[in-house]
Length: 414
Image 1 (cartoon, helix red, strand yellow):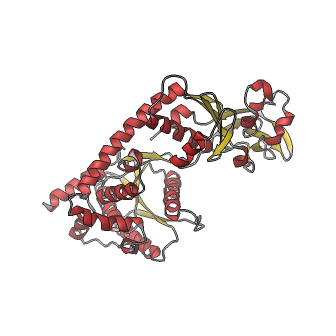
Image 2 (cartoon, helix red, strand yellow):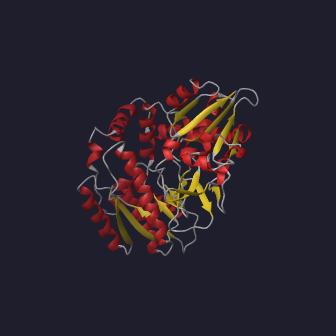
Image 3 (cartoon, one colour):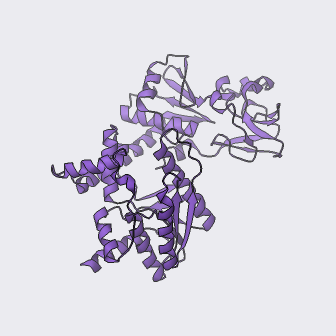
């Protein structure tokens, strides 16, 4: 029985990535039980020459115990001939949502490390318990289908493939595996600290199981929500091609083009449009956005999430807000504001900044057809306080500006 259970786990690790045997993959290991079981499974594949594996641990600097946990992972890797790397997060400022910031930083740190090592994919140790706990946490936040959807078993982030091979296994299954193989792991002390949402969700699951709401049930429901979310995204993308026109860096939502759209599809169009323009990781809150939209009359200008929204009849134009990019400066050979790339005679003494009042030095800006509010937030080439070029405002001087990711190709990417 134990052998059969091990073989099932090995199969999940073996099929986590669709890479050849020469590919190098990474395992994110914190020292906790789930990640140590995952690391041991991949170490067994290394032993049979099925994969090349390296391990990575991120120390967020939030708990002193993390140093010893990283040492545990390092000791395991040394015993199994696996290279181990510890990455330090130095960006925390202890403001805002610290856990969300730490999570985002972890993905970015690991991705940068993986690219530098020639690693094609990263394995994560999430389990069925994580799916169930996430469902309860998001349910308490009144999430819709997207929030209640199961975590992706495979996804792309920062140009890297990520996989969750053990998503069908329970935490208890993996603890059994660790005991069978006499493996060490550490328990995160925050798991028993009810100041954290995840701990409270875990406690709630214990109570709900008596009512028949088990981890298996919640995992199944979250899978249903994933399919519903994917379907809604699919149809929103179809409607976006009918209703949204990309005008250089602006978007025009032509919501009066035909009959009324279902409210959920309309909501998704807005929540795709604004993050594409402001390059934020998360869209604005539903309530805040629609309160703003309900207040817009023809000709009014409102702001939300670093964007300007204007309305003319049933056409809505979304553009970048100048105040959001006023102080943003980059070399001319780098991406500006997350969306713009400039081509031209680059030089180290030149910079990209927002056009701003420089529009006064562009005599042909009206001929472009763009509103002034749009143009002043577009990229311009400056030499200190001297305007060199404003490609979108009719002053090219050998420069060209283009969006690096088309809205219709990128905004609905999963």
